[in-house]
Image (cartoon, rainbow, N blue to C red):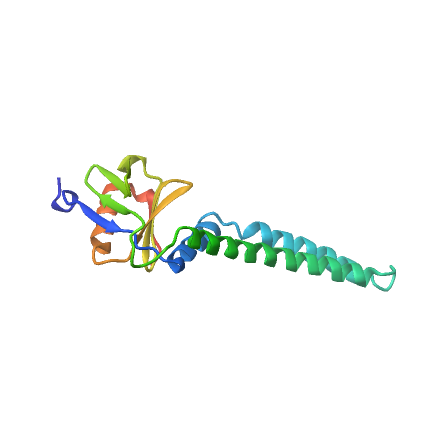
Length: 177
């Protein structure tokens, strides 16, 4: 076994509200591509608004209907996005996120990943992990499509990423820095 694979790296998850927001934006809009539905809605409503506006000379109140459709098409996606940001902010406050306190510890070893959160521990075999993403300030280690652990930037980040890339198959690794 190569020397790099024998080490155990422990990373404290000192996550603040900014880190949590960055993760939520990444997970929702970049990984899951949930921006597509609001955009499609806005485009459809805008197309209907254009059609109504084109008929404004032949149909009474077509311009008013066009304005209403366009307003709905633009305002609802904006409201959804603001609601999303608000819910992420509330969730961050609920968990009292802070850079001074570790939320959990992630221990990366040659056989498995162990996550320790207070008295609770969870083990995940490398072969069962879903995906690992490295962005500018963090590593997102997905144990399944709906659950990720954040490994904030630290002195051990490069060693952790090297270990992760040596133990996960290439299709499960994305370096997005």
